[in-house]
Length: 212
Image 1 (tube, rainbow, N blue to C red):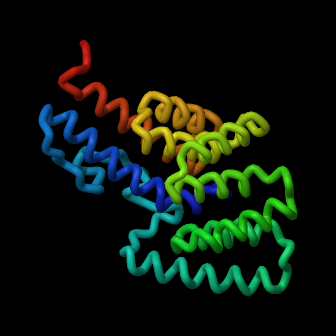
Image 2 (cartoon, rainbow, N blue to C red; image 1 turned 120 degrees about the vertical axis):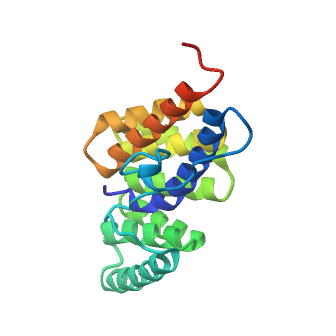
Protein backbone atom coordinates (compact mmCIF):
# COMPACT_ATOMS: atom_id res chain seq x y z
CA UNK A 1 0.00 0.00 0.00
CA UNK A 2 3.04 2.21 0.55
CA UNK A 3 3.46 2.90 -3.17
CA UNK A 4 -0.04 2.36 -4.57
CA UNK A 5 -1.06 6.03 -4.58
CA UNK A 6 1.22 7.13 -7.38
CA UNK A 7 -0.10 4.54 -9.76
CA UNK A 8 -3.85 4.82 -9.23
CA UNK A 9 -4.20 7.29 -12.09
CA UNK A 10 -2.28 5.05 -14.49
CA UNK A 11 -4.01 1.93 -13.20
CA UNK A 12 -7.46 3.38 -13.74
CA UNK A 13 -6.62 4.35 -17.31
CA UNK A 14 -5.33 0.86 -18.00
CA UNK A 15 -8.40 -0.68 -16.40
CA UNK A 16 -10.72 1.30 -18.63
CA UNK A 17 -8.71 0.36 -21.70
CA UNK A 18 -8.76 -3.29 -20.67
CA UNK A 19 -12.50 -3.24 -20.13
CA UNK A 20 -13.09 -1.77 -23.58
CA UNK A 21 -10.76 -4.21 -25.33
CA UNK A 22 -12.05 -7.28 -23.54
CA UNK A 23 -15.68 -6.31 -23.93
CA UNK A 24 -15.10 -6.07 -27.65
CA UNK A 25 -13.42 -9.49 -27.69
CA UNK A 26 -16.25 -11.06 -25.74
CA UNK A 27 -18.92 -9.64 -28.03
CA UNK A 28 -17.17 -11.09 -31.07
CA UNK A 29 -17.23 -7.78 -32.89
CA UNK A 30 -15.54 -4.45 -33.07
CA UNK A 31 -18.04 -2.65 -30.84
CA UNK A 32 -17.18 -2.47 -27.17
CA UNK A 33 -20.07 -3.20 -24.88
CA UNK A 34 -20.63 -3.25 -21.15
CA UNK A 35 -17.85 -0.87 -20.27
CA UNK A 36 -19.55 0.48 -17.17
CA UNK A 37 -17.36 0.59 -14.08
CA UNK A 38 -20.23 -0.89 -12.07
CA UNK A 39 -19.13 -4.40 -11.03
CA UNK A 40 -22.76 -5.49 -11.11
CA UNK A 41 -22.62 -5.07 -14.87
CA UNK A 42 -20.13 -7.92 -15.09
CA UNK A 43 -17.36 -5.96 -16.81
CA UNK A 44 -15.07 -5.19 -13.89
CA UNK A 45 -14.56 -7.34 -10.79
CA UNK A 46 -15.36 -6.02 -7.34
CA UNK A 47 -12.51 -4.01 -5.89
CA UNK A 48 -11.13 -3.12 -9.30
CA UNK A 49 -9.24 0.20 -9.35
CA UNK A 50 -11.87 1.66 -11.68
CA UNK A 51 -14.47 0.89 -9.03
CA UNK A 52 -12.80 1.98 -5.81
CA UNK A 53 -9.64 3.77 -4.76
CA UNK A 54 -7.44 2.80 -1.81
CA UNK A 55 -9.81 4.44 0.62
CA UNK A 56 -12.93 3.17 -1.07
CA UNK A 57 -14.21 6.71 -1.60
CA UNK A 58 -16.51 7.31 -4.54
CA UNK A 59 -15.17 10.71 -5.54
CA UNK A 60 -15.88 12.71 -8.65
CA UNK A 61 -12.80 13.66 -10.75
CA UNK A 62 -13.12 17.24 -9.51
CA UNK A 63 -13.23 16.14 -5.89
CA UNK A 64 -10.23 13.87 -6.42
CA UNK A 65 -8.28 16.73 -7.99
CA UNK A 66 -9.14 19.05 -5.12
CA UNK A 67 -8.10 16.38 -2.61
CA UNK A 68 -4.81 15.94 -4.44
CA UNK A 69 -4.18 19.69 -4.20
CA UNK A 70 -4.82 19.62 -0.47
CA UNK A 71 -2.40 16.73 -0.07
CA UNK A 72 0.29 18.58 -2.01
CA UNK A 73 -0.01 21.63 0.23
CA UNK A 74 0.19 19.56 3.42
CA UNK A 75 3.16 17.57 2.19
CA UNK A 76 5.00 20.64 0.94
CA UNK A 77 4.65 22.11 4.44
CA UNK A 78 6.02 18.93 5.98
CA UNK A 79 8.93 18.89 3.53
CA UNK A 80 9.76 22.47 4.50
CA UNK A 81 9.99 21.35 8.13
CA UNK A 82 12.24 18.38 7.33
CA UNK A 83 13.63 18.38 3.75
CA UNK A 84 15.36 15.04 4.27
CA UNK A 85 12.30 13.02 5.34
CA UNK A 86 12.24 10.23 2.75
CA UNK A 87 8.67 9.15 3.53
CA UNK A 88 7.41 12.69 3.01
CA UNK A 89 9.37 13.05 -0.23
CA UNK A 90 7.89 9.82 -1.56
CA UNK A 91 4.37 10.85 -0.59
CA UNK A 92 4.94 14.24 -2.17
CA UNK A 93 6.15 12.59 -5.36
CA UNK A 94 2.98 10.55 -5.37
CA UNK A 95 0.82 13.62 -4.86
CA UNK A 96 2.60 15.54 -7.62
CA UNK A 97 2.21 12.54 -9.92
CA UNK A 98 -1.52 12.42 -9.22
CA UNK A 99 -1.73 16.13 -9.99
CA UNK A 100 0.16 15.51 -13.28
CA UNK A 101 3.01 17.72 -12.12
CA UNK A 102 5.65 15.39 -13.51
CA UNK A 103 8.64 17.70 -13.18
CA UNK A 104 7.86 18.27 -9.51
CA UNK A 105 7.26 14.56 -8.97
CA UNK A 106 10.59 13.75 -10.58
CA UNK A 107 12.37 16.18 -8.28
CA UNK A 108 10.68 14.75 -5.18
CA UNK A 109 11.59 11.17 -6.11
CA UNK A 110 15.14 12.25 -7.00
CA UNK A 111 15.50 13.94 -3.61
CA UNK A 112 14.20 10.79 -1.93
CA UNK A 113 16.71 8.70 -3.84
CA UNK A 114 19.54 11.02 -2.85
CA UNK A 115 18.57 10.57 0.81
CA UNK A 116 18.04 6.80 0.44
CA UNK A 117 20.08 5.55 -2.56
CA UNK A 118 18.61 2.02 -2.42
CA UNK A 119 14.99 3.16 -2.26
CA UNK A 120 13.01 0.90 -4.59
CA UNK A 121 9.98 3.16 -4.12
CA UNK A 122 11.82 6.21 -5.46
CA UNK A 123 13.19 4.23 -8.40
CA UNK A 124 9.75 2.89 -9.29
CA UNK A 125 8.35 6.41 -9.11
CA UNK A 126 11.01 7.71 -11.48
CA UNK A 127 10.37 4.81 -13.86
CA UNK A 128 6.67 5.60 -14.01
CA UNK A 129 7.44 9.23 -14.78
CA UNK A 130 9.43 8.00 -17.78
CA UNK A 131 6.43 5.96 -18.84
CA UNK A 132 4.05 8.90 -18.36
CA UNK A 133 6.32 10.94 -20.63
CA UNK A 134 6.15 8.27 -23.32
CA UNK A 135 9.53 6.59 -22.81
CA UNK A 136 8.24 3.10 -22.02
CA UNK A 137 11.44 1.33 -23.04
CA UNK A 138 13.59 3.22 -20.52
CA UNK A 139 10.87 2.81 -17.91
CA UNK A 140 10.87 -0.94 -18.53
CA UNK A 141 14.66 -1.12 -18.16
CA UNK A 142 14.52 0.86 -14.95
CA UNK A 143 11.89 -1.43 -13.45
CA UNK A 144 13.81 -4.56 -14.45
CA UNK A 145 16.79 -3.09 -12.59
CA UNK A 146 14.63 -2.55 -9.50
CA UNK A 147 13.28 -6.10 -9.68
CA UNK A 148 16.79 -7.53 -10.05
CA UNK A 149 17.77 -5.92 -6.73
CA UNK A 150 14.36 -6.22 -5.07
CA UNK A 151 12.62 -9.28 -6.57
CA UNK A 152 9.78 -9.09 -4.03
CA UNK A 153 8.94 -5.44 -4.63
CA UNK A 154 5.24 -5.68 -5.40
CA UNK A 155 4.87 -2.23 -6.90
CA UNK A 156 7.75 -2.75 -9.32
CA UNK A 157 6.05 -5.84 -10.75
CA UNK A 158 2.68 -4.08 -10.84
CA UNK A 159 4.14 -1.06 -12.63
CA UNK A 160 6.03 -3.21 -15.12
CA UNK A 161 2.74 -4.94 -15.91
CA UNK A 162 1.16 -1.57 -16.71
CA UNK A 163 3.96 -0.79 -19.16
CA UNK A 164 3.71 -4.19 -20.83
CA UNK A 165 -0.06 -3.83 -21.14
CA UNK A 166 0.16 -0.35 -22.63
CA UNK A 167 2.62 -1.72 -25.21
CA UNK A 168 0.25 -4.55 -26.13
CA UNK A 169 2.33 -7.29 -24.46
CA UNK A 170 -0.66 -8.86 -22.76
CA UNK A 171 0.88 -12.17 -21.69
CA UNK A 172 3.90 -10.42 -20.16
CA UNK A 173 1.59 -8.00 -18.34
CA UNK A 174 -0.51 -10.85 -16.99
CA UNK A 175 2.61 -12.63 -15.71
CA UNK A 176 3.78 -9.53 -13.86
CA UNK A 177 0.34 -8.94 -12.33
CA UNK A 178 0.26 -12.58 -11.22
CA UNK A 179 3.67 -12.15 -9.59
CA UNK A 180 2.55 -8.95 -7.86
CA UNK A 181 -0.61 -10.63 -6.59
CA UNK A 182 1.40 -13.56 -5.24
CA UNK A 183 3.77 -11.39 -3.22
CA UNK A 184 1.01 -10.06 -0.97
CA UNK A 185 -2.50 -11.11 -2.05
CA UNK A 186 -4.20 -9.12 0.72
CA UNK A 187 -2.65 -5.73 -0.01
CA UNK A 188 -4.39 -3.14 -2.16
CA UNK A 189 -1.84 -3.66 -4.93
CA UNK A 190 -2.21 -7.43 -4.62
CA UNK A 191 -5.99 -7.29 -4.92
CA UNK A 192 -5.77 -4.85 -7.80
CA UNK A 193 -3.28 -7.10 -9.59
CA UNK A 194 -5.56 -10.10 -9.10
CA UNK A 195 -8.43 -8.09 -10.57
CA UNK A 196 -6.43 -7.37 -13.71
CA UNK A 197 -5.49 -11.04 -14.07
CA UNK A 198 -9.11 -12.09 -13.65
CA UNK A 199 -10.22 -9.50 -16.18
CA UNK A 200 -7.70 -10.71 -18.74
CA UNK A 201 -8.57 -14.36 -18.16
CA UNK A 202 -12.29 -13.64 -18.48
CA UNK A 203 -11.66 -11.85 -21.76
CA UNK A 204 -9.52 -14.66 -23.12
CA UNK A 205 -12.05 -17.32 -22.18
CA UNK A 206 -14.85 -15.29 -23.75
CA UNK A 207 -12.99 -14.57 -26.98
CA UNK A 208 -14.42 -16.20 -30.13
CA UNK A 209 -10.85 -17.30 -30.89
CA UNK A 210 -10.42 -19.14 -27.60
CA UNK A 211 -10.15 -22.90 -27.77
CA UNK A 212 -12.28 -25.20 -25.61
